[in-house]
Image 1 (cartoon, rainbow, N blue to C red):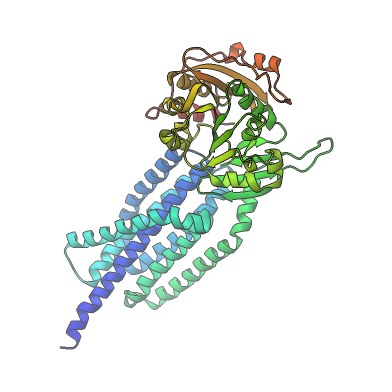
Image 2: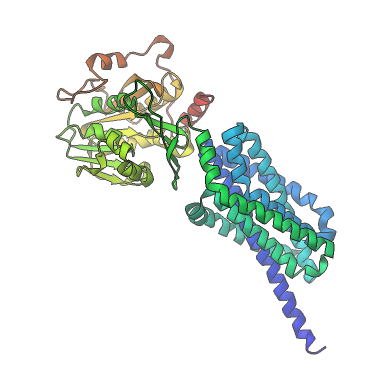
Length: 523
């Protein structure tokens, strides 16, 4: 007795630590599942706030349902917890794969997301009640102390999961394999606790069933791991018309380059760049877009040029055609896009190897933050930024952003903004124009036909009240598309696409985001 008495508290402490460790690991896994669903939706759909609201709202609701549903299972808490963890490991680990398949092949992403979030939330919600019963079976303690211990481990584990997802799992494994890794960790944590601390509570039949279930989960996750690369390649190709020749997921976005098969009568293949599924250019007609974007703004002083976005180098190519340009500063968030533009042979030919020119300096950072600290003044600012259909990009089309650009312009400097389609998204287009004007610019709206995009609009602006002349520079290089007559016609808008009186967009009221989502829905 005397030798056994001190051993009992030691066993209790070890068992209690095992339960709390399981809580810690399971909480980390649960938060990773949530973040994985939010991140996938942001990449595929583009609405980060909306996706986060759907996932978190549905999962939190389901967690409450799961906690209630676990009440009848408390008499067999250990076995029930093991089943919950195995099921959660399987479904959570395969969640990204399943949702990507639903998006690529079935066009059922929305319902699939809600269903997946609900089921995962249901299982996560059942964990804490079962673990509470298991903790009390080790040694009875006050409800307040038990709750405090469990939730402390749960919250700290959630912190680990929140940090591990963006800084470890995504960079090292990617979304698909990252979810599989977490599923495996989830299964191991749950089974390790039940098969060590609570092994005596399991019947022989329960042990056999859990062993069989573990084998099934391991085989499913292992097979998914082995075939993940082929699955992702096949699913991605399903989303694009032409063969995918390059694909990567950077820290900020999915980057895909496609190349069409050469057709009879076509001198060149069609090289296309997509960011998060949105077309950035087609090599067949990109010159129309980039000539219209760049050359009207180059009429006047142009020694110092600032380019916001345009990591593909195509706008820079047009700017460098003027020998009196001394410096081009390119501010683009994603270094992976610039690296691709520097390395991919056909893209290098298309952009004229622009980034190899000694006059070009690249800064990979957020344009908004960079402008807040910029001290240099520029003769020309070219804002060739992604469309404002996501929360992250909508801030780059606000009054505040254009005010920062105005501060960075030299006296007499010009700003040109790619502003979307005045035909397909007229409210977005005219809201951007209103935002530029409210920031203290006089504007000249114009639009041209780019077959890959349709009718596409731009804004030329200068600080003050006198609009700039919409003309080509007298020393403009030979152009394939733009000439004085085309540019004059570009300033005319038909009656069915006349100016709309819509409000400007600001950081606190990003109206352009609402307009863009509504107008581009269905295209």
